[in-house]
Image 1 (cartoon, rainbow, N blue to C red):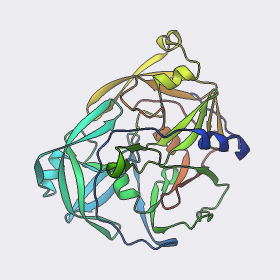
Image 2 (image 1 turned 60 degrees about the vertical axis):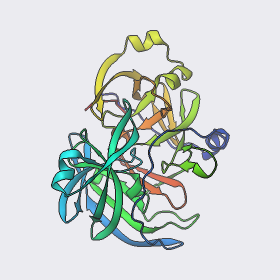
Image 3 (image 1 turned 30 degrees about the vertical axis):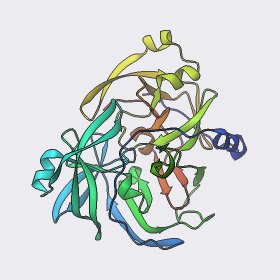
Image 4 (image 1 turned 180 degrees about the vertical axis):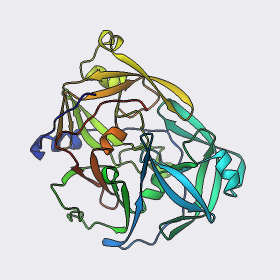
Length: 330
């Protein structure tokens, strides 16, 4: 396992990166969900839930239609998905002739649709939530950003907790987290469609620099293999095909698709103001409109991450002096 050291850098070096980058497109399905009534500014009541880290996966327990369900916490999923077998047990009715397309690690995956009449998280109920139904999910399904973005989400996997705050931070306000919290500017840069049909996806993208190549990266607790880099962006960072050919091959699975990945040691990774020296990242083949950099479960194991969807900001609190990005496939 390769350990990487980090140090805080001046925010000045990263500000031009975010400002100068273009939006990245992603073709993915949208979904409507029951919405909470949000206050205009300020944090409201909080829901705190335990998170079980099971075979590297982060699992939360919710109630769907008065039945208990175990869902993968997945900040890389724009909509929630229920396992086909679990959908039957939970009393969900699949809508005939409905198909949605999801962007997965192995490419695109299709899913049918169903409506959850009641999804309860820590006593707060969401109603009439449109979800995907797919046979290839961990546990009973996936809890995605269609639900999480309705809160300010404080994900603390090092201590096995997620706290969902109703309402949201005011502009300029910091989250109530003790310690040396680092703020990362973010933007919702995933836009597809045109005109009135244009859709902005809920991903909060942040500036990333890898061996001098710059882009926007996304956070994905559902990337169980670890943090990933696309082959195209790896090439921009100076990695040749010959170098990749000599790297160790690992295999991960995304919605049932086997994905070959290479473990490659890079020189330096910057995520906002945080610096990782000699990180080992997974390099995977490009898929249509892929994310250049994905910060996976190995990042979350050593960071507390607060997503402020109301103000498009991300805050991180490193849990260790030497966090690891080791690119381990689970």
